[in-house]
Length: 278
Ligand SMILES: Nc1ncnc2c1ncn2[C@@H]1O[C@H](COP(=O)(O)OP(=O)(O)OP(=O)(O)O)[C@@H](O)[C@H]1O
Ligand SMILES: [Mg+2]
Image (cartoon, rainbow, N blue to C red; front, side, top):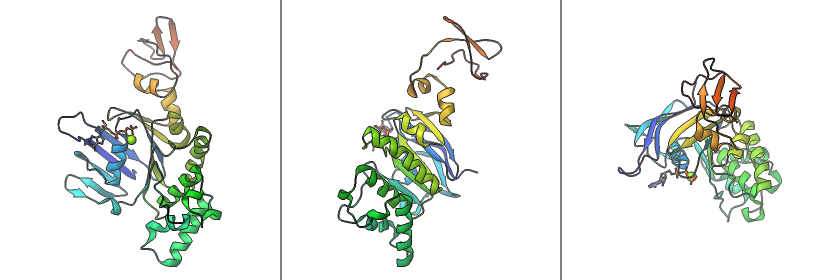
């Protein structure tokens, strides 16, 4: 059963513009890590903002954990959706220690429970020894983990992360991809991560959603996105690809191209006459 479901979502910022998001249908299971992958302006941030409740869809509905949080007749405000956000610039409070930053979203918790939860998430992100430090005394990667710990502390239904790796240099970025995926899996949290970098998407996700111009192009496991891209856009976007135009043979297992017959890794079910060879 789907834990998060987006149905027929459409978002128009201005009536005259092209929709920022269109025909969006997406189901996410509990505990799944999904990445939204696509070029600048394709609607990734807009989708996150609609799930969080910062933006209202023009049409469609959004369900989170059995609750319709948005439909034509219903709007659940952001603070009641059980959504944790990790911002690109971490947005930590500079005047608060790490433990106080993490405790920030727990103001309604009892004191002893709050203390225990802060200790628990600090351990989860491997920063127990840094509890009393201030954000400017941490590295970029450590601040990133604090920001994730703060989002996880109230036990949200879902964690949303917009370009979480973009402020990190290449080496740290690679490490953080694995650290973040690890932490999210340990916490058994459902997460939606936005990125325009296919390496991020492939390293962290159970499922990749490739988008272009507000429309989903393909939703699949990273391996399947790479091996069986559904169209030329996906093929070109996710890797170094040679595109060959050809005609699908009758057996649906070969393509006749102008450099000869190409054998497909899998039988195609596509009736069109364009297929991609990686
Ligand atoms: N508040 C707004 N008012 C008008 N148009 C907007 C607004 N926010 C976003 N858009 C438009 O909606 C489209 C999708 O924007 P969005 O920010 O979701 O893209 P993105 O995929 O996150 O891009 P990037 O990778 O550059 O962050 C763009 O054409 C953008 O100009
Ligand atoms: Mg964006």
